[in-house]
Length: 251
Length: 251
Image 1 (cartoon, rainbow over the protein chains, first blue to last red):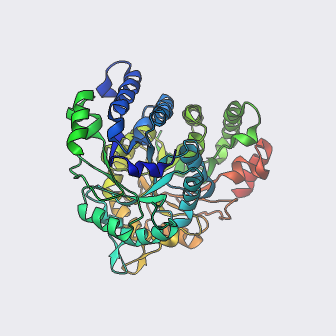
Image 2 (cartoon, rainbow over the protein chains, first blue to last red):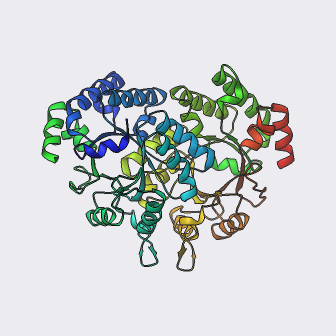
Image 3 (cartoon, rainbow over the protein chains, first blue to last red):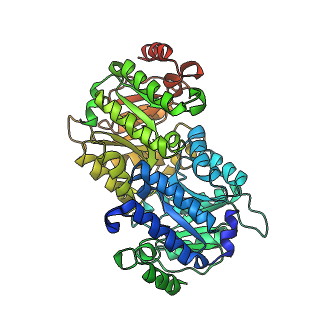
């Protein structure tokens, strides 16, 4: 498996953010069954499945077991996996994260946070190269206050663009192929999505916020549109039929 | 338990970054036993115990079980806990992280990443208030390349100082008491530690890098000096006697 193959698939990403309260008794077993069924039903319509680590950590050790089980399940179906952990740390700690998510699941992607600097990203970049995976570095996030640091002016452009320029060099983009270093840009900022696409044409872009957060669908090449609540809990609850319809309506 | 009581204790923090290769067969059972023994032996010399989440995640679901067991063990010994996860995300995802680490372990602290902005930090701030815990927001990290974003000039001061000023307002510091919002400043940048201490006198500061990363020991009020490898694996391996000596030498 090579994560870059995700870019040849339909540009929709299923975001899995499980909430046990919506799954009744035996919530974990129900989440397992529902997610496997949903991934299977939607597989042909998806670029990848994105697991939001926070919601699995919130389920305790059994939640992490479930996460790894569902990630393996996706891979068995041929679906690339994105671990949405927004991790970031120095040296050997970054290596530990890279081992856990990128190397243990070759061909997968991880979202990472750039605040610590480019040297702190290198263990992730190297692991993604070794394991034919990818990184999505937070650039411009979907929340209303994301501009506080991300839009600070740096030599006449917002900080996130300055960061993107530096990453584009780091990503060692080869002509005619996608970089293993990509970015996250919130769909709530359509101008930023288009700007990122123009500034770093070889960068895969993960664009969350489709549906629930009010983001639109982007058809630019290399853009993966992620819908979580709107696709995983259409109408506010687990519903396989409604999810299928929602996926068709998006694409 | 109230995390702010950690500031009345000796200013040394034991960083727990377990590496299974150093623990032979039955590594997890050995890590459990060694860490409990070490915490017990050092308890009177410590402000808190800091668990590096990356190393527990790297151990798989059983690692998360071990993490929660050791965190409970520390609390039973009266030792405040810092979850070093450098988490950061938007809205309900930030809430999920806050529930898992701050609310499930009242009186504990979590390290968080500010790249997403102040609004994304609010669920953490509110959870820390409710659960009498604390946050340590990454300001200036210990790695050589931390300046890439953190030292960008913002109106004549480095970005991390601009961030600290905004956080100081957010932390609602009350006169004569410590704020529940604090910061992380790498001990490899002693000037930054002193500057942070001066700019935000009510902020607890977590200063990693003592020993192994070449950071020194800071005796300024409200500074918690964290040693990981140098205290958890003195001489490169688990060694209770050597750890006791190292703790005495530091303080």
